[in-house]
Amino acid sequence: MSNTIQGLALINGQAVRGAGKPFQAFDPSKNEAIGPDFNAVDVAQVEEACALAGAAFDAFRATSDHERADFLDLIAAQILALGDDLIVRAMAETGLPRARLEGERGRTMNQLKLFAELLREGSWQDARIDTALPTRTPPRPDLRLRFVGVGPVAVFGASNFPLAFSVAGGDTAAALAAGCPVVVKAHSAHPGTSELVGRAVVEAVRQSGLPAGVFALLTGSGHGIGDTLVRHPAIQAVGFTGSRSGGTALMAAAAARPQPIPVYAEMSSINPVVLLPGALAKRGADIATGFAGSLVMGVGQFCTNPGLVLGIAGADFDRFAAAAAEALKPVPAATMLTPGIAGAYQRGEDQLAGQAQVDTLLRGQSAGCQGAPSLFKTTGAAFLANHAMSSEIFGPASLLVACKDLAELLAVIEGLEGQLTATLQLQDDDEADIAAARTLLPALERKVGRILANGYPTGVEVSTAMVHGGPFPATSDGRSSSVGTAAIQRFLRPVCYQNLPRALLPAVLREPNERGVWRRRDGVLTRN
Ligand code: NAP
Image (cartoon, rainbow, N blue to C red):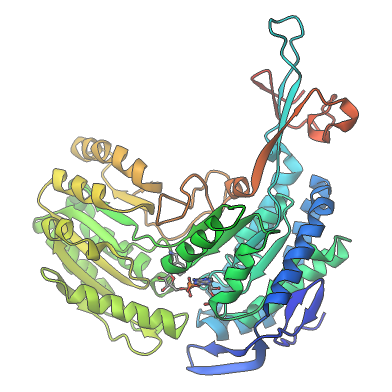
C-alpha cells in the first residue's frame, strides 16, 4: 500500500476522485495551501456510499464478535503501518506537534483494541432471558433480548483530534464494533491525514473479506455533503464533533427526515473548575500552575478545556488569579488548527474583553493562525447578569468568576448550560470544603457528564468507566458517552425474541451458553 496522498475519496473499496469542487489542504503553521488537489464528492457519490453501506449491513452484522474484533485489531495495525508519513502529514495539516500526534495515534489504536476486547468478552449485547412460565396465569412466554447495531452510521471527523476523533477514531470504532457500516465525512482541515487513515481502514476491510460498503470516506468542504449524508435513508445514526452551529444544523436535518434518526453531537463546553476555600488557602499557587498547564495544552483546543474558574472572592482568590496570570505570561502564541478556529478565538477574546465588568488579567499576542493565552476576571453578580460570558471560546482563554459566597457560586452553576466536565479543587481533610462540595454536587450531576476532584479536565482516559458527554450543548444527547466502551451503546438498539425456536435464536441467546457470556437470566447475572 503506497502512502502517497492522491486527493481521493474512498467508495466501494476504491479510491475515486470526487466529482465536485476542488479544494486543498492548508498548513496553518506556514499559512499556505498544500497539495495535492482534492475534489469534494457530489450528491451521487454520497448516495452511492450510503447505499453500499445499507447493502453491507446484514452481512457485516452477521460476522461473529471474534471476526469483528480481529477486524478492529487489523485497522489498528494498518494505521501503525502507515508509519511516519501519517505523522508528518498530520503535523502539516494541523500545526500540532509530533509528540502530541504520536500519542494520539497510540490512543487511536488503543481505542480500536479496547473495542476488540469488548467484543471478545461478549457482554456488550446485554443478553437477557426471562424463561417461560407456562403455569402462571396468564402464562409468560419465553423472552430473550439482545442489542443489535442500528444500521449505517455517518461520522463527522473532528478538527481537533485528527486521528483519535476522526476517520478511524472513537465514533468509527464504536460503530464498527456494533456491526454498523460507517460513512465518514472527512474534516476539510485534514483531508490528507483522512485519506491515509481511510486507506488503512479500506485495506483492513479487504483483508478481512468484508463487503466493501462497510466503510467509505467522503471528501469535501461545504455543508451540502454533510446534509445529504445525514438525510440519506440508509443512514441510521450520526456521530459528530465540532461547532454548536454545525451540530445543531445536523440535528435539525436528522429530525426533519421522514424517518428521524439520533445524532450524537459533541459541541460546546466551558468545563467549570470550582476552587473551594480550603484548597485555595492551602494550595492556591500549585492549583494556578496546574490550571495554566491544562488551559494551554494543545493551544486550548480541547473540548475539556477549563474555560471557567469559580471561587469565593477574597485575598486567596486574588492571589490565585495573579499566580495563574503569571504562569500563563511566558507561554508564547502557538499555531491553531485552522484560520477559521484562530479567527473565532480572537473574536471570542475581543467579545469577552469588551464586556462591562470584565477585567483583562492577561492578553497574549494572538494574530493570524497563532493563538496566545488570555485570562479574564469578573464577579458572580456580573456573570449571572450576562449570559454572553458563558459562551465557549475555543482556545486557551479562561474567565475567573469571583462569587460573593457559596450560594452565589451555586447560582452560577445553576445558570450554566450542560457541560462535559466539572472540576472540584478541595481539601479532603477540610470539613468545610467537603460540606461545600456536597452542596454543589446535585447541581453538578444535573449539569455535567464527568465530575473530577483535584485534577484538571483535559486528558480523557479511554476506558470502561469514562463518560465523555453531558447535557446540551455539551452534547446533543447527554444519555451517552463518546469516549470509552460505553460509546458503543449509542449505535445499538434492543431486539426481543419471543418464543423463537432455538435454531432461530442468535448465538448469544441460545442454550447452552457456549461462550460463557454474562447474561441476565430471570433477573440474575450469570455465565450459564
Ligand atoms: P465545524 O465547523 O462544526 O465542522 C465540523 C464538521 O461538520 C466539518 O466536516 C464540517 O464540514 C461539517 N459541518 C459544519 N457545519 C455543518 C452544517 N451546517 N451542515 C453540514 N455539515 C457541517 O467544526 P470545526 O471546524 O471543527 O471547528 C469550529 C468550531 O467548533 C471551533 O471554533 C469550536 O468552537 C468548535 N469545536 C468544538 C469542539 C468540542 O469538542 N467542544 C471540538 C472541535 C471544534 P467542513 O469540513 O466542510 O467545514
